[in-house]
Image (tube, rainbow over all chains, first blue to last red; front, side, top):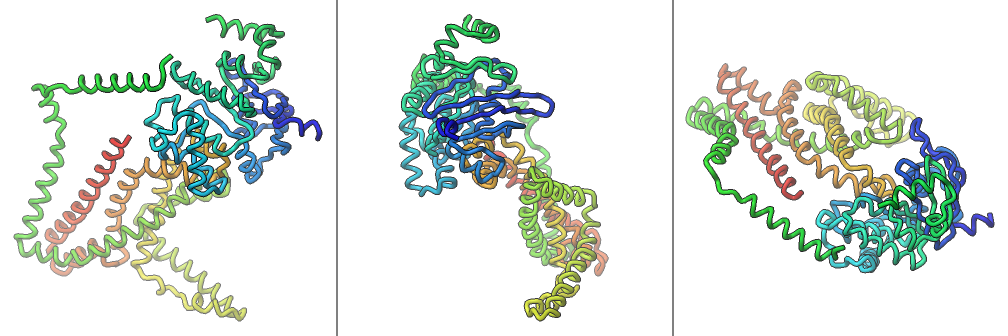
Length: 249
Length: 299
């Protein structure tokens, strides 16, 4: 157990099948608190599935997931409790379109954390200031640009005071000119010592912020090392091929 | 790379440019187009209804029929409203069951919907009024007597229940509610399924339970999406209240039949009846259209 206490996330030999398709073929991974881990790889390599297994949005077919010393089960009460410690940011933002920005950020605080309206508002405004859009508190998501929406989504997750943040291709649906504003927020978060697991195609972010980079292909972790080693001196042919293809342009 | 304010400014400019190009002056063909698309049917409908009302209010035989039949309007409206209210509850529960991951609730809800959809409304009304309600009353009565035999006095009100305890009006309301609950279940199911998976995932990832996610995130959006459909179902229900006249309750259809039977003035009775239903449904449909339009402009 000592080993598990050192790590905030432990993934042990996780397999995941979708009907007959095997998305994960035995993935193991341990992440220490405060580390920023970036997962890269071609589409269909299982990187999003791995991320979604960590908070059990996908339940692994076999294998174990441990978060903050607890093994995740399909017990809904336990899952709800653990998920409050794991913030998640999605590719398509998934803001609640019928609620204002402020309500988006306060809803879960109130119904899950049981915070009072005033307290939830205060925390929400603090987080909205942190991501740089407090002035949009009373707008609806539909009135915001993609970059602003994604920053609200980050604020919504942060307002729950998570120990871990998961990012599932947070900039893939954004116009190029809005990617930076989201990456800046993520960089700040990384500097503040948040434990982060990011699936992204932003190699610049990986170089600048990541402590570890994982390259996945075909449901397996092919290579796992520091960004310097992985980008400058990849060990596997598959990694070299992938990097040469994405860094060509 | 632009700052976000710069992006917004550009967007506004683009929006303004778009607006000015869409302001095309009405040309001849545009006018013809408008005339072709004008809802002439609605004008005709209004003319027909006004003519009918003129006939009804100028011809004493029609006026008499109206004043006789209109006594049932209260019953028709109350039946429609109460049944619809109950049907909304049945429908929401069954709709949630239809999308539930639990095999038990899923099958239960599907069974309900399929049974109701497989029986003609008229037969369903007969069945609930003359088989369903008496059977439930009999069961409750037996249960009450059982409690009394055990010396439990709470059983007394149940033991007094019999076939006459539930009036035909109430049976009519129950029958319509059961039938429309199944239709509304499908409306709610479609509404919930129209909300993207990401909404549920986002809510669950914040630690909300399935029920909390449904209540605060999914249902508010789903219900908003299906409001026009719910309105249309209400219009349909108002029409279907005419079927409960087979239970000899005093709705406008039953009263019109009584009037026709007694006076042999069939045209007066049934034309007046038809105009009354048409008035109700046209007014309600207008509200639904208004609602649809408002929702479209709200985005």
